[in-house]
Length: 597
Ligand code: FAD
Image (cartoon, rainbow, N blue to C red; front, side):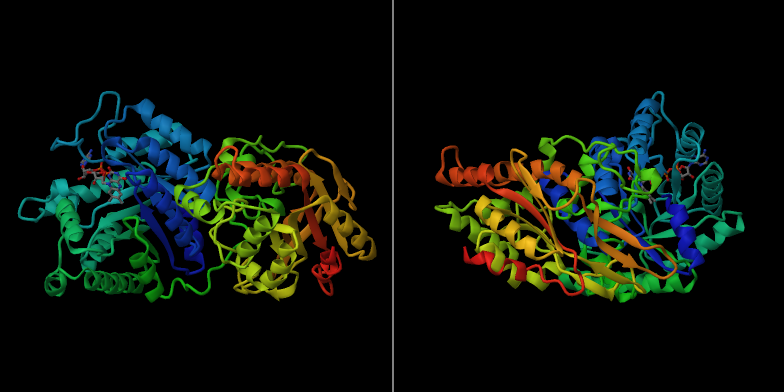
């Protein structure tokens, strides 16, 4: 969706919205950490996030890759910056074609700074001279597909600012007139350069309105995080620093914590004043840091750490081509990245349904499905790379996992347990300690408020429901006992399959079972999660492969631990069990006698 549409929607409801800006880190570890941070920050529902284009195009491939992952894996509406520096038109088009094919609809069109070591911007052969040319090109070649943002400078562009820090009225007006041309050529909104004098920003907005610029003007707020960085940045951008800010910083400049706290206070006060003037969108330059930006939003009452809301049980996609996706099989609940990558080629979403999984094929399993972030790799190695002597050691690892004693899990991309798992972890401990090794579960829910912190989704005002679900590996003996038990308990439905595809179940091959649904004011019933036999058969290959590619691979070739895990993989069944009685059922009572074996 275009950012301008989000801003218009929010304006209609008189809602304040905010966004975060990030830059591409220099190392792979930095990139991993940035995505961890983004996950946490995006849980607070920013309307969009930006990723910058490295000076002189230095990070082109990385920026393209990060924007793709932001839009499609983090699932946040993404705006990619794009500059003209060192970019002939074919490279510009390559970047735009790439993000278009990845379902990204937002670009911040910039001229860029001169290449390293040069004072003046030089138009590259076959490239553009200024942002205006780029805006015109994007509109001419891509029509209305992209939402285009342009940069605005409340204190005028640094090129217009003289060495004494001043700018002539003529220079300021010519900058404004040029900004209007960028907007008239197709810019939908303006994001401003950082500033610390709020009056200058408010005057700039007023001056823009005077010359007929009517689009939203979004203030770029950069919290002060450390004194030296602040001086460097304001020096580079020739930003005015009001005397009271200089005076406040001088006595605390060597105390990093005090500078940070002041930065949060100042950022909060600046935003308060801006909001009081009726500007309802805030853009935070995070510098890839989390605390100050979130603290400012918390001070403003725009976010609440204790009430992170989910719009669905899984994060809703922002990709323009799958925005209407509304149903997913439960099997990938803890592996959303794998699910997204395996369904990336689906063309069913425009119909608004996940629908029939036999029709569009799931992507083949690739090494991507087993790739982990390095930070996560370390944790897995520590927690799961401990040698195993017998099958009970395997059981113990699963017990510790469902009790939250270890945070990583080869079958999960998430950090730790879902909040709802904490509601049933004693029952899970019991089941796992007897060799039913759970990899996915949910408690039964019968009409909880939709803003419940543990099981809620979809925002306030509705009620949510779910059937108890358990998915686990177990030995053939235990499976046989469970199958017998299910004959006495008609509310239980199950499907079981081993690595080779031998299967047993008490459901029809076409049965699709809704296991999560919600009832909301003035809406049809929403049922975002299902259990279905076809997807289960696709999922089982991934689930069994994880024994080898997610766990056994942590041990040396020939290690006894590997043999134990290989034995489990070859002989155990994967079982999906639903208790359809979400009112009075008790899926764990059904295990009671079986545990005696
Ligand atoms: P332009 O809009 O082309 O303007 C540059 C200057 O030239 C202005 O003073 C303008 O008035 C003048 N000018 C240009 N053409 C004309 C004309 N025909 N007639 C009259 N005057 C003209 N840099 C990066 O490298 N990567 C980023 O990701 C990045 N993100 C940014 C995000 C924001 C919100 C901002 C404010 C800046 C960002 N920058 C980034 C910095 C930016 O690239 C530089 O400030 C650059 O020097 C100018 O880019 P621009 O798009 O504003 O240029």
